[in-house]
Image (cartoon, rainbow, N blue to C red):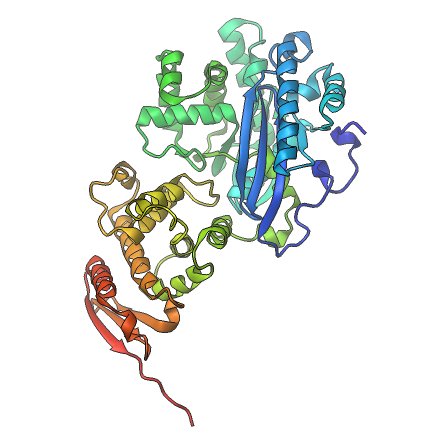
Length: 519
């Protein structure tokens, strides 16, 4: 068995084994996946929460396997050599990390090249690794499932660009629908004859054909692939956008159009120096810009988002039982972080119960952010006390978290900052605060100060020792202490309670609960 898709018959796909045998499991055993693409070869080792796998290890090499494929029909010789060298390294690394057997998936270049089968045999002989070669429609499906890993219930169109191909897949109510593949990868487009006019005509004709099959005016367009991420990074640079996390970065058709014009007027080496994009990737950006310009003009999506998740994550999602898929990836990641890093695992749920009376009328989306903050509130305790607020903010805004947009990241980070620090003025994070409205800034502050106060009862569950009652119309905040817990309400706790009340702009009242004995 050579590992090709058409010859693999077991039910567990390229892994050859079940990854999620227990649907109730919260953690994922370490899993290694390699994506042998037309432009890059990347290994990712996943670990962490079962519903929200984290990157334990992530390394790529820009090999250019598909360079010149359109003209020669063969894999690029230098690309073959570099890819084989990378796979030798990855096989050894995976063994040392306990991430074996390593799963290797190959896409357009290997499936299209006449020497693809020979290359697969060479890799197996040299490294023991088997390449699972997937066709274009399967590539589209797995990329779409990768999007679902980060966006449960996503609706729209997924566009995955590789070096030698471009795939589209439809998402509706969290399911993958129609999908198509094309030869609109930047490496392959280099070989199109007729100069700039010939290239423009070819891209337009191919895109019109794709639009006939997939339709236009989709609610959302999810962009997957290194060339799209490079353009998004350049869009951030042009706009002076303060948060450089690309997952769930939102762009508009107008913004992308302006960025494409801006790139055309700039020196690519200068842009590389400013953004850290590799030379190999930047060389493909101009052609990728032409493809994206035509894509937006033809398909006319209403919203455009970048997804950092694609084929590799889609392979994991493929095996997830439905019960596991239905969990919230954000909450699952935060639960895992609490279980592995907090001083008192499980306290986050109690803290959430304690602060909930302050947020009884907020949306479900806001409630999940409050729950996430409570789960994460103590995960940075090992940091120096003077810097815990910064570590918390950095972790929340830059962590590999699915199901969390950029506003949500900053809200979560700011709430955790206020968990450890009353005042945010003068913070080095101030440019990011501009992503939130005044109302959101205030709510994050209130949440952080409520958690800061609730943690004063951390000897046991705060919701059993004290109760908050909030009367917004009366502008009153009441604290009810259980008999015997009054001693916990010392000077520091009083000061934190006063700070919370100031953030809410209310007066306070402290009572001791009466215990009613039943005869």
